Amino acid sequence: MYKIAVLVSGGGTDLQSIIDAIENGYIKNCVIEAVISDKKGAFAIERAEKHSIKNYVFDRKEFRGTVCYEVLKLLGGKVDLIVLAGFLSILKGDLLNKFKNRIINIHPSLIPAFCGNGMYGMKVHEKAIEYGVKLSGCTVHFVDEGTDSGPIILQKAVEVLDTDTAETLQKRVLEVEHKLLPEAVKLLAEGKVHIEGRHVKIIK
Figure (tube, rainbow, N blue to C red):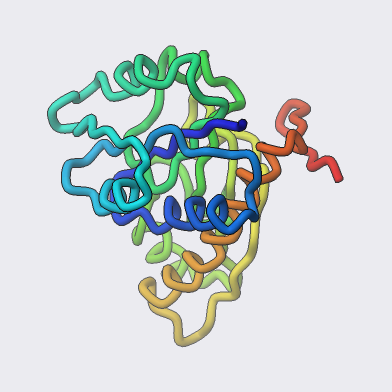
């Protein structure tokens, strides 16, 4: 059984997409061992409880610089993959080393556009609208020592309409996120993802 942990900070719609994909059989032989939030009161925790998934909160205001240490202490040797699904704390230190190429994140743009420090949530879509791009989208990538700089696993484009606001663009990108993130977890669980430097190959 392929074991994953999902790290969250907010509403948990990306988490829900993984839960649904496991429960409906799209992702097979996979279980969510833990859901971890770095924010008290995150609705994602309620989603985990509703599906009887173990959940933990390491509020970043209380744990400050030790969130990564607590996550590693909890998950070390217990899961195959860590999935960041709207997780706002930056991972660093031993956690990255122990889980090298076993942590993935979903970002709401086509990396390398509109990513890096300070680029998260609605800010990403605001910048895309401001810049006037015709395509945006989302990216699932491996997490490394940088911010949104790890090797890219999957990307999906979303057309930016002339009538779009940051809010309407976010809504359409989220719909794509809810398909792309479960697909990435499925491919990893099936052992179909192969990394060569910065290049990720999907084995058919």
